[in-house]
Image (cartoon, rainbow, N blue to C red; front, side, top):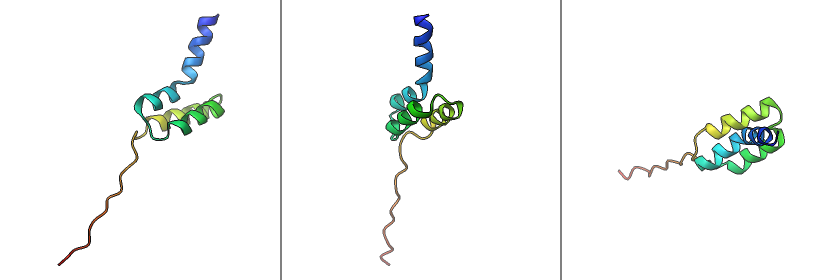
Length: 68
């Protein structure tokens, strides 16, 4: 029974684990979503999708004005 419980807990935290392993820039927010709403299927799926999105924030492209 205890091994089943451990497996269930690990599956529950898969989105958080994925976010932390990938170094996602929103890993704390993903973990919070997973803890607070992971019990609902929609919250768990949302956290999973978010953890699989781009791991690094997009950089801002700044162009210098033309000097001519």
